[in-house]
Image (cartoon, rainbow, N blue to C red; front, side):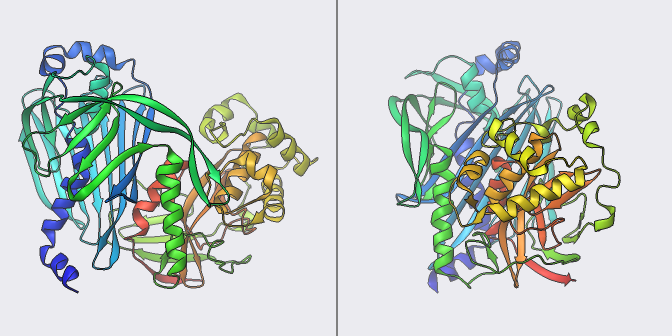
Length: 529
């Protein structure tokens, strides 16, 4: 088709343009901080940065009024530094179909917000583009750029003093003087897309009020999330003079993007997580179901696709992954071995499970609980300390005190007691316990909460499930029994067989990362036995 021919001719140019487009909403804000504030008074910024709190902001990605993707910005404050992580994933129309493009950017800084390292990865139908680098003092940025898996450029870019990357700018604005119309900002920056350092001045030219969705609820009749509460936010418009594509954006007093206009008619609109991510996933799952059989990887779960999956015993599975770089995913460790582009999963042997496990009494000791603090903690929607959850866990295990037997009893109860139905909501352990229904996300959420409630470490694993020649999005659990053991409480597997390919460990923020891959990832099964 003509559109596809044009796409093919442009090749690498399209890739570079994609990098610019996906980075523009952050890069366009990079030059907003006053030069006097950052360069003249760095100590002030360092002191103010100590007040910085962790945050997460979500966006619906729209094109011509239609939601085509999801984006997020997460700020993590650590003892020794600050991490800023940005995600962008969208399905762009191309030649009568859609082509997925995704971006993941991680910036690591000191507590004073000075750059340590950055890593940006863009995946599309073209060869993936990956850029990484580090600050060499205050005099240079050392970076390397990859196309596919081969480095294509490695250079040092000279800088004069500290520089900021796009993810840092909203933070600096939040810690600086309050924005107002007419205020001018200037900042030395490093743009990873252009691999250049420069100084540009900007001037806030407008101020307005925005109504943003603060919370949402699931509408059973429509099968999607809808707004419940809204909040009024004051924001300031920051144009970017002379920038290709004419980027402009609105930011609030905390430095968070409210609305951003990108090239090609793309808009980022801040909203609640459920409206930004879940509704996009629901729409995509419906489209996938309507075109069943057209692809080898399904974003719908095996339950939604009504795939038959029993208590199989696939002992090992070896696959070859596509050309996309997989930095940052939990592919290697435990029963999974990942080298080059080859991933091998080996199911745990029944006789070895729990041999070196601490006793149930030991799991309750202070030093063991400290070691597994994250895997025993209560999280939003994973109510491990809730009285109902604890009561149910105790009722299931009765007088059993052997950790392996406890883990298996709870797995069997969840598999037998929770109806397997497709759902489109955010998994909530307490809701699943009360309604007794859900998909793999819901089964796993409840299982992990039940295990944690009785002091046995457990965590959520997300990845792909191989069923009848196709891979489906799925979620299962890992429980610590001397070693981490994969458990599938949805399909009743203890341990889970080797058809489970883990890509991520953790809650919702980690699970959304997997969706960056599914539109472009290619998998070839080399061996399954």
